[in-house]
Image 1: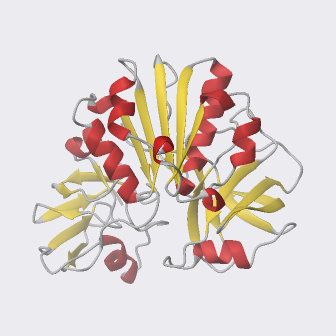
Image 2: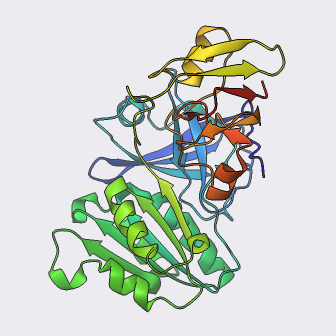
Length: 326
């Protein structure tokens, strides 16, 4: 299935509330600037936030998908990032009007599974929280385990304590007593057969969970969404290749260390991008010929195997040339 991404439509939203939710984590409540209901979304969705300084960043929607009057975000201040989260924290305030994209979902919830296991690390709680709201509304069996370094960094604790599903929530602090720390292997082994796993958070946390799950869980029951930076786009080991534009026949050489997006952009062919790390799916482009070298975390294994689309922000080519539907 080819992902269809709405790359142009934007929503004018007003920051109805900005709150401090934990150390270095801010909460944002966004409402339609005209007072209308916002477009519906599904659990696991995110929006692109178009900042007045020109940056574009993705943030997961954390609220109950039944809510149409607002979108709720949680933003971690990332001092090692490119400045998007710092701008959100330092420059935006209640009352400001900004633009966001329509919601899209790269981390969908299987609402038919008999049981769900939700694991969140740090700011990864945001999409997981929305999933918990949805599963609770459906009356499905699930458990939510939320890990943080310490209590000061555990956002939305009061919201979780007050939720209808609070008895299904378990908290784990790195600096807490040994008996409350998350035992990944034990938790996975004790989960009912057929359970679907959803995990989001820092790379190390996710790698530990997924690595353990892949020992015995069917691959199709393991779902993930990465936050933060993945591997660098290019390296000295990359081989050069060429990209052909299907509509014009033009061919462009992509050298080692260069990305398809940067080379095409320098030649007047703009591909919308956002994360530029192969996480968000904004730049997904159809491949008409050639063999991509997939380096993203957005497309599924099946979509990688089909080789009919790629993320030109970070992916390359195994063939001498790839033809893109541009």
